[in-house]
Length: 267
Length: 94
Image (cartoon, each protein chain N blue to C red):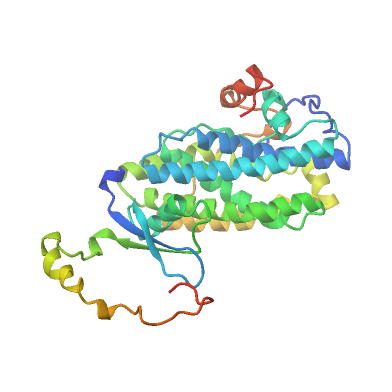
């Protein structure tokens, strides 16, 4: 794996141990849910049918709810008077700690479902383990969220199968969507310093432990869809250190415009 | 896309012991997706604990032009109403 030049830690407490690790870990979880929630929200009013529109909006709202819990808890641990909203709307792109997969553009419906399938399968396994976190708040969030994510994974799997095993066009689009997204999967299983520290302290989990389960579950769905596993590509890494693609900045522009332009706005 | 999908009638059981009640319909390509569309469309505000979806095409409906023969004869059969019983206050859902 190519190594990236290190950025100095820009978020207040990301380099030390103990509470710093907890803060950094919560930020990753919160940013993943927040960014994917915002992406799915972009479909609102544009989905192929009103029923699909509601499915996507429901998932978006589940994820934004998770982000609120994770980021509020992160701000509490940080202890600098910020809250979840402050973290969501007043950080710049280099301070975001989400993985690359969730910031990928929606593309067509197949590409959106490819992203959802690859991410929700991982998130379901992750939350399933995080219910045992030594941080009681984190464990409680995971316990609530794992039910939501189980449904996301189920719905996305159904669409992978429908589109993969559908018409020539839906199959072509599904293959293209999976090809686009597959290079961002290795990052989900990366164990960097913070991930290792979180796992060792019992706050977090070692994601490499469920890599086998992930490959088995995704493999079964792809098989039912009549699709090959996407070819190996050079993995794209670095989201957890603030390296992001061009797409995230544009997403944040839309998401942060209102609270940044009118900082005291309420509704 | 959805205009090519068949229509499904959605029934929701609001809580245990109650009957499933017709709440509306969804378009979906097949039964499994219809169930999920019904979940996402009709139970997002805790409306239900159980869902049925039925292909709309499977519903056999009475013909409006037969209304007179079908329903008018029941109008003067007052003795068919169980209104001559007293119902205890604590019996619900009758």
